[in-house]
Image (cartoon, rainbow, N blue to C red; front, side):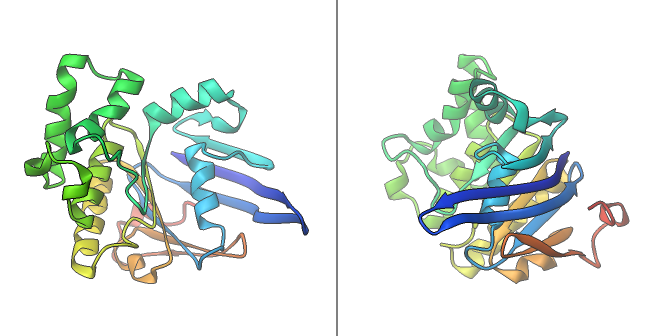
Length: 236
């Protein structure tokens, strides 16, 4: 489902060239739940951005769901991203003037993946799936952090993407709510969605199929959870 081969990302800074990623090689299978762990500034978010087509590699190849996204034009990439990848951000990024349901409907409106008459019903079903259907017509300001994150997850699933990416999705949640959110991601992977989470919390290794550790832009280790299914092993 995801393949990064010899991916390097460099940025020009006043102090010279900075390598955010260096010769990254990793593959993720369909329905796998992978955690990318590392300290702040390690390059894990940049790696996630490569997979989601938010940023482009300086060199190397990135293929997701059968498409070599590094070779797409900006317009092609925007269309591909809307249909193929769902994003969940640390700070939720919900539009404050839209209700929960309207936030979930927004990706469907942009990509026209579902007929207009079906979009609200789908949004309600997704909000029900993540346990916040009763908050459908409330603005984000009236929701708790955990409820906002669940709405954000429902929005990420709006266009039924094969890949969901989450950048520090539990960083602003209490431990109980964070555990519930991680359980949602785990359920998504079990249902066939490929899930990749960037996190500085190593505890996530206990629930992910594999953990990819990034230090200074380089993968220093890939560990398979001992309780994961055997087919999730040895695919990096």
